[in-house]
Image (tube, rainbow, N blue to C red; front, top):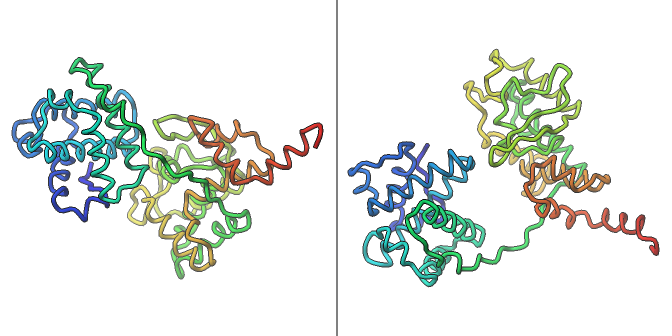
Length: 349
């Protein structure tokens, strides 16, 4: 795992170095933190050991995604660093268990002063709630202060899908992004984009596929591992199957069943950034808005299915949403579909 500092910290030199040291220590897989690591961390030994055990628990027992664990690590590191500044010394376990709701709110206000948005603050508070719940269940002690703090109000976000014609143009026009690129990379990128729009995959899900997962040789479904390592089966359009087969036929490297399905020019698993850059250039060539991102193709998949009369529960399953409320956001995009359904179904319409 690599040391990572969130962008909003880079303008605050007083907090960067301690958080880097925190993340460097916490990123280690061993549950045993040596005295040298503790002194480098600048946190009381009992707190550092409990924090490391919690992170291992999140990854191994809860099965949270690596990016989620990384985010929670930064959140906890920033919180402990703040407490050290707030109280004039590294907090130990008794100090953590004696925190008040006012202390928690002070941390959130401090982060807000660094222009951290409500979503990041909400995630940080969720991480702290999980951490203190872990401490209670593992017998360290109980502190209800974090539960007494309300979640920050989140802005009401509505998915930003592309119109059907523009979604199609984005996929078919990906060859405009780079002048005379290798044919196999164009075929690869087209296959990735077709999966995002044709099957509603997240970019991370598409790039995590192995060759043995490829929907070729008569297979028209795909088993996808999504957030929280949850698996789902999604249908794959014939055009997507053909795009993947064409890419495999043109790929200069002979791929084995356990190799990544989509690779870069160096033969390693393809980076999401490559697809993002390709779309950025394609947007400029096609005159598409900045909202035309890889994830917008997933939004477009759901919105266009809903507009064609698909059931909301079915779309939830295809997208891999844990809650129907997440999928319901798409109903706000396609109000025309809702009005038609109302007029068709209501006896007095």
